[in-house]
Image (cartoon, rainbow, N blue to C red; front, side):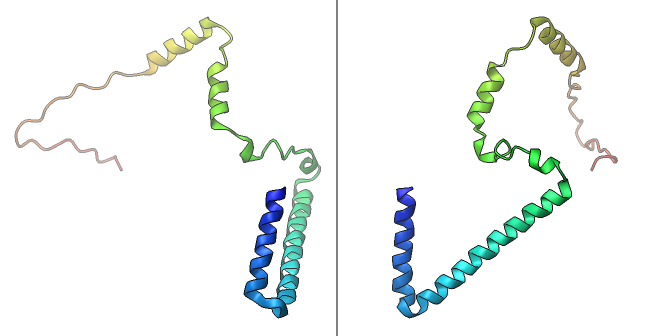
Length: 123
């Protein structure tokens, strides 16, 4: 919190030096009007969302949807530490997956002067 106040103070000092004491009140008023307009816009957007979504809007946990809370390292660690419910299910899933995989076709070299195969249905 103290660092933010220091930054605001430095910005204020720079503004006084650049704008001068005569123009500073005018620009401060313009900044205040801009902040009020942005706040009004955000409030109107929130009200419009509330009207369009109905009562479900109030039930949304917005903190849970904040993308800043996601840590990829934690997500991967949790996924790796989650143990499957039983070993039999894992073995069955591996067998089914292995059965679906096809072996690649053997590579046959082309004869000299033979054109390469061309698939007209390919992109």
